[in-house]
Structures are given as structure tokens and as C-alpha cells.
Length: 122
Image (cartoon, rainbow, N blue to C red; front, top):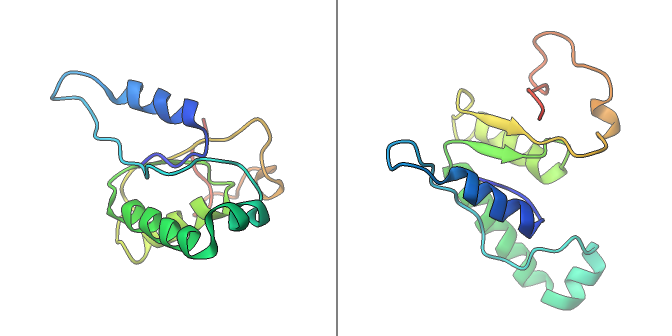
């Protein structure tokens, strides 16, 4: 599962996943209006019901996946990560943390050895 609000990054992930049938990946994503608008603007534009339904579909797809590419600094990705390791029982499967240009404050220092919130960042 690739979780991003950026259409260009989604297209890039789809291109990177292509390859010979034996090594190609299936990339799953929600075909939704991707925007970085604030919640108030989104509520006015789409309505609360549509936002909630879209979020629940995204969460369901996320938990069905077998690998994730997601910015761990995102609150939504943190929820997905915690649920995949507990409810979905997929703690041993790949999770790639995409770190943006600026890391969130809670990730500025390296995590102590063994702390489950730390991942290899790209």
C-alpha cells in the first residue's frame, strides 16, 4: 500500500513497481481526490459522511496490504502502522517510512535500541 496525498508520488510509486511478472508488485491505493487542504475546507467541499467513508475504505485497504510505504510522521500512517502490527497481525511484514524534508519533532532524535516506533527512513 502506498499512502500519499501527492499524485506525482503515487505515479512514481506505480512506475517503480512495474517490472517482469515475477518481480512486479501490485500497488494498492484509494482513487480519491488527493489534496492537502485543511479539514474545514475538506468538510465544506466533500461533506463529513464522504470523508469518513473514504477514510474507512483507506483503512480497510491498508490492513489488507502485505507491505506499506507511508510517512510514519503522519498521524494517519501511525494509526495504520499500529493496527497492522496488532489487529492485522502483520508486524513482520515490510514497512518503509518515507521521511519528508522535515521530520516531525518526535523523530528528531534517534530512538533507543528496541523501541518499536523507529524504522529505517528513506
